[in-house]
Image (cartoon, rainbow, N blue to C red):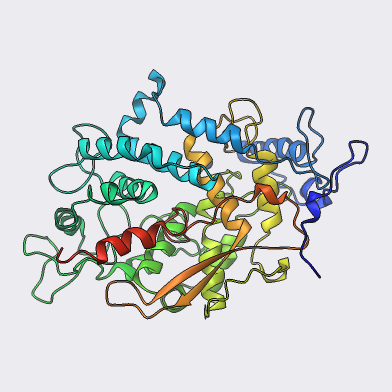
Length: 443
Ligand SMILES: [Zn+2]
């Protein structure tokens, strides 16, 4: 049977949209103890149900009760966020690279061309780069691992030699070594380049004659961050949190292929149980911690864990590049629920555009990036491909294909671009930057 998206059929205004009761009915089990938490939960549920029903005034929906993606409005919102920001944003001066990453990544997910931002990004990147090789958050600021990470991702997104040449790998490597802790962790965040020489220099506090490297103890540190709930925390003994779950899986996936390294270091059934508990009904969206509310940004932090876990369970495969319809039966979470939350509750439907945490919250660049990333992972399937590897490029890679479901509820034109499951940048951008650096002699 030829594949066709049923959602393309027009919705007659006089017919009630087809929204399953799961997304319109109050949750059957309520906590009888009234607290601020239970009151907030009830309020969010009520506001989400109103948007999920597909009957909001002024919002056109398809026959499944889902509005279309306001692509042009969201692109305008991100373009504007890359320009001069109002004075209220001065507190965000230390997060400039993150604003670049959120906007550029969101724009590419929406299908926009970001090459016009390359020259401006290169100039700004050089002006906030320190001699250490790291990047500060703004002009004259100290290098920070998180903003350095965001800057490298932004340069990878705009791509091209001029952007790649900004990165001083030798200096940055030395700086990364100084951040390495004897516990195996890094002082600020998890991550690292897979194609760098691994020996620690003598002036690193972690240097020992046993030739430790940047990755020594890292996977064990991640193992110690898995909590009794099964989720992953910022440090051993802290509370499991969605953002750390994604960072931890990304870290492990950099060290080795997910199907090998995840089960070696993590209690997978417990992790899957905790991740599954992050999706709520009727909202359909994801929360970041136990007893917290759904929030659009966890569409990525938690939703982005599923492609890696599903790929790990499926195991390595041979590239087919053939996209065939699949049913929801093989999914570990409700793609439909997440997509409904994102398109019904996560969009600012006014002229302003952009994506948001939840109904009645203002849109912002951070949520626009991560809500769209979550939409992308819900609309695609990730598989691990074994490749030859050459000592620099790892011997496995990923294939990201459209997830085609005969029960698809969103309009096909609202499919966003595929995203790299580990780095959260547009698919193919990682390969481009790694190929560039692996072709350079020396270091
Ligand atoms: Zn959020």
